[in-house]
Image 1 (cartoon, each protein chain N blue to C red):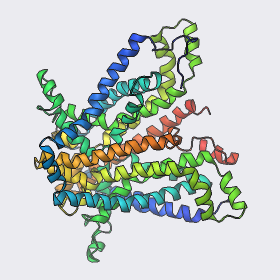
Image 2: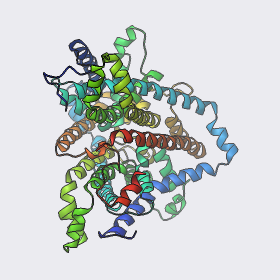
Image 3: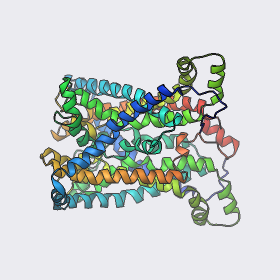
Length: 302
Length: 273
């Protein structure tokens, strides 16, 4: 932080008039672009009074959608977390051929349209797809059911935990773990007593962001869920359904739950960033200074 | 160099490879396989049909517009957050990430309600005869909202690390604020700015949830490519859905390559310590 001090000339853009004007313009746009959407959700949700809001939230279809969303998150987030930790451990604690490529593959879902993800899953598990006919014969339902929703959610959030952990663990190097192992600690003991305390905040940060995305995912899930009301509608899909049914108050009541989740996520994010989480990612993955042997750092920074 | 001191390599790599194969590679492979099984002529007929081409145009132009807005607004927002101290600065800093945290469907209905003709902003804009909801402008608004944090968050750390000595040197040489900004600060920010731009543009190309509510979804004018793929699926035209989705996939890979190159370049300037 460079706070201008008295004995220094003002920095570029510090002229009071310019400064005030720029802050004013930017804050106006923040109000229009970011605050207004949040405000309109609350306004619309309660526009017909609290009784209507309560009735909309406690409607069986809405409750079912909330339940399905929570169940999806309870399955997808822990599996994703385990994957993220395993991927980070493999990529940062060892040197192997194809490490950089693996990192790129893990990050792919981040840059792919959720619709493409949904369509892709259809061609694996759908009747038109690779395993569809076999699954049909075995009477296993993956698409238009919970497994499909969970799989699509896992696709879109695959990089979330890994990309928080990898830059951090890369920067921390391997010395501590190597010391622990040489003193006789087992692999699990090393992980739980040495690595985990160092990465816990970043891990939690990744989990929080992953959870928010799983609960809010729309595009990919809307392709694979089949949109069956009261059965395979997650909360975002239920919002769409109510909105297109012209049940505006109901749609915004359901939306207010997800908006609340978003606000809680932001608060958690700020609190975790105070613990240092999320900072490593500001420098893109594998860019942080490496405490590993020279050959390794040369290999990855080329 | 088989110097593996730490345990757990087979297990960790095994889990990673299995997960990545099942969750990421298999579905994308299936999609490519399906699109490739069409044969070149059918594939070309589908992806070059007038309706598909119109959807590319709407998607790309709207994404360009949204990215241009974010370039100016994101840059100004990052500047204000880094260089000035004012009440509520931390609050605004936290709010920047709202578009990432807010589910796209929620953003979609909120923006549509705001910009509809009887909405808070729509009614004001209607008086100057600007229609946003159900026009390409609406698509742009939704894209700008969902990709807003990218440029702010790529420019912010570089701006924070900027060495004040560079500006001071320019000042002692008599440079005006304007010329110092354009000729000293902006070139230093350019790599980060470009990386942020490409992330923002790529995200806009793939966005779906927020757009379909506000777009109007008229074929040939306000139908984005992602929606066209979705519509083909609902019509049980799986081949067309595969072909159009593959266009989005190829674009995403191209953008990923561009972003990686730009980020690697940005890194050369920021990885000082």
